[in-house]
Length: 274
Image 1: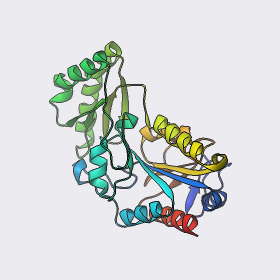
Image 2: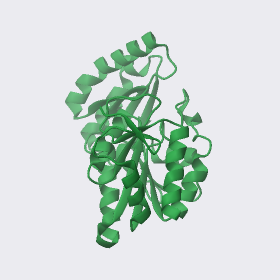
Image 3: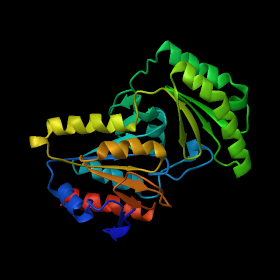
Image 4: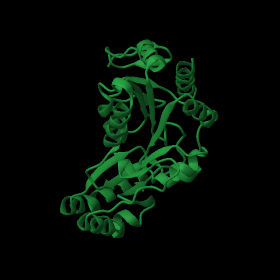
C-alpha cells in the first residue's frame, strides 16, 4: 500500500493526486460531498446517542453547503438519528440504514417496506437468546439488527459476538439476510442496498443536472461498511478513509480525525468559495 503524504492526506493509490483533486473542486460546475457519520464526523461513544460531531465540524459543513456544494450524509444509523445528532438547520440530505432510507432536505425519511421473509428473519434474530440477552446492546433498525459491544472488555466482546454469529448465521441463510461486521459490533442486514448504491444514485443525479456532467465529488468514511461507497467512487471522485489508524482499504487516501479531517473540510471551503 502506497503511503505518501500530500496536502495533509496520506495517498494510498498511485493514481490519486490530492492537488489535482482540489483543482477539480475549484473548477467544477457542481460539487458533492458525501460523509459517513460515526467515526468520521463524530468520535465513537459507548452510548451512540452521545456521539456528537467533533468541535468545528458543524460550522464547516454549514459553510461548505453555502458554497454551492450538495452535502449528503450516508450512515448505518437510522436517518432521524443522524439528523438529530448532526444538529444542522436546515438539515441536509441523509441516507440512513446503509441506503435503505432516504431523507431529502425538509422531508421525512422514506418508508422501508421489507419482504415478509426478511422481516420475519430479523424478528426471529432479535428473539435469539444468545444474541439478544448478552451483555451487548441490541438495536433494531428499519432494515437491520445490530449488536453493539463497544465498551465491553475484549474477551466479553468476542464471546458476545461469537454467540451472535452462531445464532444469526443459520437465520441469515434461511431468510436471505447477510451478516456484516462493523467497528464495535455485528449487524444482520437485509441485502440489496448499501452505501455504494446511495453514492451511485446521488452522483448520477448530480451528473444529470450538471452541464456536461461536470461534478467534483468525495466520500469520507471510516468503517468496513464504507468500503462499498469507496468502490462506488472509483472513477467518479475521491474516496477518503477517516481513521486514527490505517487499515486495508479501497480508499484513495487516508486522513486522521479530527485535525486532518478539519483541514480537508477547510480545503474544500477554500476551493469551493474562491
